Length: 72
Image (tube, rainbow, N blue to C red):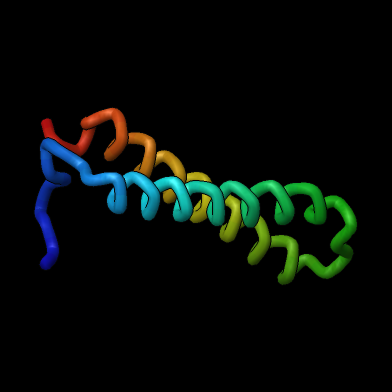
């Protein structure tokens, strides 16, 4: 089932899933940022910047859901 808005109450399983998603994106974000400076290829550097933006935005979305920001 897909929701237009996050439900008002989360189960433990929902919270575990959101936490796992956040941790995965945070790890990918952190590793990408740490390696950006070592890249010499301009095309790869731009792709890495795009990835860091995507990871960051996904983390913000997850935090908004946990804070109830998407329910407004």
